[in-house]
Image 1: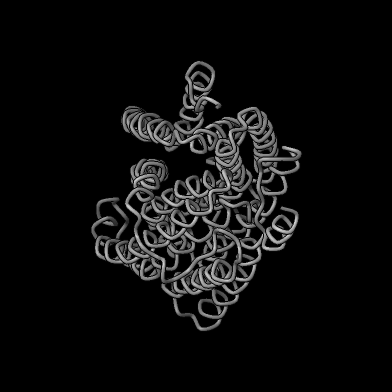
Image 2 (image 1 turned 90 degrees about the horizontal axis):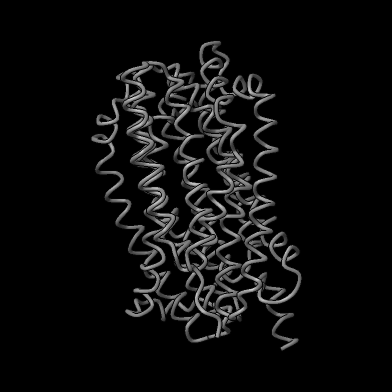
Length: 454
């Protein structure tokens, strides 16, 4: 056992079923936080370079397309988070045969999904841009950015698939290294193609595709070279019917969770578009800042499913409760601290993306309406992560559908109709975060969500 643990440590994997709970969660979450930071540099580099070299039209074009991008990519990201829960469960139970079947079925699903997303994303882009009411002056740039981006769908999907496997076995260190490398490449390509060669907005999307492809290749190499039970063997990549059923049961609700958020945001973006391209650019700049708030939130919402699932697999329910509480408190504290910082420095941070005074005004207004309520956002995401790890992914999905999508869209539609001011859109976010937090608190307190310990 000692040799196995040493080998696993060298490869980056980590069983979370023994030892200090805070130390294990933080050790796993810290690389996730840094990894998410460098991943976010993809989008931030696009926005900074496009905003400064192509102007507000270019920034607005990215804003119009980014929600649609996440609508598609987000589903598959959530799908493979759910797949990782299945891998974690078998890995925590030290079931080698089950872990192998889960890994190879996940990869088979990733390959098929990547091809499907390429065809779908490229084909429907013009229709979605029109449906969202994208202004004529940025329509063509938005469609171009979107179509180029989705030509690299296989790289994006496989990256999420392979990273999901690595993280499910406790390896968050190697994905961090790969993201640092690919983020640097992305920035260099952005500067060279857009700032130096002046190739336009499509080049920014192309730079992101190339960088993500590199990350996917590095993750693939790590799994191929592994000597542990999660090693990837190309000849064994196939669908296992039983395992595919488990992956879809956990992954589809998680994928819909992410997509439902995006569906709601598509409608929100359509409402923002009605206030003109300056409002679009200002809100886009805020979205780039908000993405950094999601870094600690996402890292804990990703760490908690792995911790919870591994310990359920090992039948250690006491560790599940302790880990859930520690992770949630830490996530809330970090998110609220970042929110306060954004509130104070919003004018300078928004100006980094675009110096137009009206764009800055829209961005600062959006920022200061929501950032002090980030603790509610952190509570909701942490609770959702715990439930996904427990195999209850359907619950967060329904919360997203009913509160973050249906209620939020209904509220905005009615509010803007009677009070046609953009601030009515902003207020929908703290309100829906509060509602989902109350629901999760009730569910975790009064509903049986863990399997019976045997």
